[in-house]
Structures are given as C-alpha cells and as structure tokens.
Image 1 (tube, protein in one colour):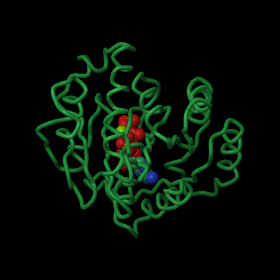
Image 2 (cartoon, helix red, strand yellow):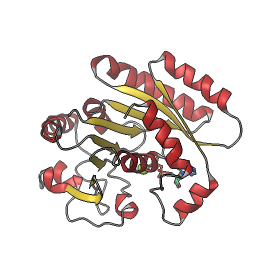
Image 3 (cartoon, protein in one colour):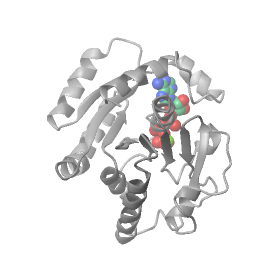
Length: 249
Ligand SMILES: Nc1ncnc2c1ncn2[C@@H]1O[C@H](COP(=O)(O)OP(=O)(O)OP(=O)(O)O)[C@@H](O)[C@H]1O
Ligand SMILES: [Mg+2]
C-alpha cells in the first residue's frame, strides 16, 4: 500500500487550513487508516479540537526526546491517529529558530519514519502554518499532494500566485507533488465566474483546481460553540467530499 501524504497550506493565516485538515482526516478515516499531524508549533489548536491533552508531542520527536511511534496518539476516532503539537511550547525556542541543516537532518529522519509506516496508514494529513517557513520544504518533499487554500480576494490571489512562483513552480519539477487550489469562505453569491477565472491563472502555473467551500454563518456559529469536525451531511463536509473526489483520494 502506498500512503497518500497530503498537506494543507495557505499564503495568509485564517483561511481554514486547520478546519480543512481535521475534516479531511475525518472523512478519509472512513476509507482507511489516517495519521493526522499538527505541524503548526506556534499556534497549536488540536488539543482544543480533540479535547485531548497528550503526554508526548511532535515537538518531542523533533527535538530528539521522543520516538516517532511514541508521539502518535492512537484511535482519537476510529481509524484516526493524531500527532499533537505542544500547546505549552515557546515558539522562540529551538524548532522555530533552527537552521537549514537542522531541517535537512529532520527531513532525512522523517523520510525513514514514513517508509516504516507505509503499510500502516492509507493517508497522512499535515496541518501547517501560513506563509513561507523552512519546514515547508520538508512538507513539500514528503508529500505527494498539497491543498493551497485561499479566500476569494485579490490580495490572497496575488499572494498565492507569489507562493506559486517562489516555491511550488520551483519545487514541482523535481518532486512528485500535485498542488490543488481550494477557495474557502466564499460568499454565498454567484462567484463561479470569478473563481474559474482565478483558477485558470493558477492552471497556467501547473496548479489544479479542487473547487470551493462556501462561507457559512452556520458553520462559523457552530465553530464558535466548539464544533470543528462536522457530520457527513454537513455543508462543509459535503463540499470537502467533492474535494476528496477531485483529488482521487
Ligand atoms: N467555510 C467556512 N465558513 C465559515 N467559517 C469558516 C469556514 N472555514 C473556516 N472558517 C472560520 O475561519 C476561521 C479560521 O479557520 P482555521 O483556524 O481553520 O484557519 P487556519 O488557516 O488554520 O488559521 P491559521 O493560519 O491561524 O492556522 C475559524 O474561525 C473558522 O470558524
Ligand atoms: Mg491553523
């Protein structure tokens, strides 16, 4: 079995990466075993989403004080294992301040870990922080699919194009990576023409179009009251299911 490794990313913060990552992991867990990794050390939120306070974290693996297998929290939901980032981590410490060599070394370690997990997981889903960071190079190298999320406005479109130029276009020819564009928080008015026209610009740069998720006040309200993983018949889940189909997951 080859593991599908997918990471979510965006140019700006607050686009919906974490919401997409956890719901994607939840949908995929209906089809096979999933490992969901919180790869955002500066603003961890999985502890809050899953109401779980583990003893070991991704941070422990990264700084050498824990084995990869030991930082996996098994069966958070059926067929869904999760690696948490430490909410008490001070972002000024080691990981954020590490140099290129450290990240390169980490990449080597992670490649080995994923080889040993090939038979265990059908999917690995990474959440990630916005914008450019060194760890992104590792995610790009480790993953075979990326979902680039943006809200439909010109500065996010232009910012994402910049990411395309400085990062994805350069990385793609060397790597086995398919990058998909996903609009989120799309106003519930007819924007299909705008979205298609923006998606066309990205297609020129080799980025595929995964579709869009509407901005729903009900979704925002439910999230304000602590729901982040939505049931199968929810509007967010249904839109994300279409993304799953486009990505052939
Ligand atoms: N389709 C949607 N409809 C309504 N609200 C949404 C939708 N998607 C995300 N949101 C809201 O947007 C906010 C940001 O979502 P989320 O935390 O997933 O973004 P993020 O990209 O992970 O942010 P960060 O860059 O800070 O990690 C949340 O408050 C969430 O409720
Ligand atoms: Mg997030």
